Image 1 (cartoon, rainbow, N blue to C red):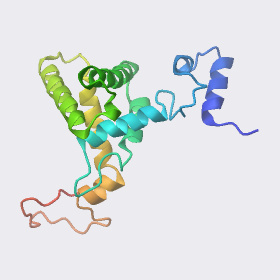
Image 2: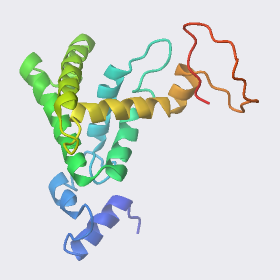
Image 3: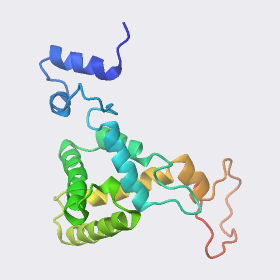
Image 4: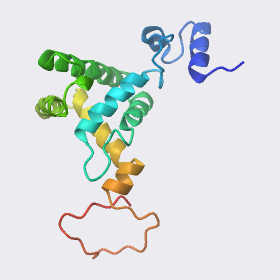
Length: 191
């Protein structure tokens, strides 16, 4: 019998009465959905959506954009593996809010609006998160868009595309040279 990880976890959750970590997510997320799950929090369509958000933040220029680097997948892993439950919830609600804001402002979902409209929407969210971050208490959580933006940048510049094409990359670095010549406009080093 061939069983994938998702089916196995779902069966274990059922056997244990949903008491495993993330058990409640299985019951809410629709395990029988046709949208393939990436992990217990994200579906493939949500990863695709995060790729679109990240690609709006870091679009293709002379180097590949965030979508090419599949930053959405990186984001899904980081949120699932590294974020506390409260921050996971903020992040997930943030994805919904972005789509709702797009529907409200442009009468279309985020993935169906133009690149200029996406940029306009995310710039407004960036302004909002900066104002929020400036006035929030130390204990208050970060703004959802700040989380998305930080993960987009981290995911992109730690990807093969970001490290080797957006940054200068030397796979086997030589000796340290503190006086290495730098010309204005040179790419930063990945190594």
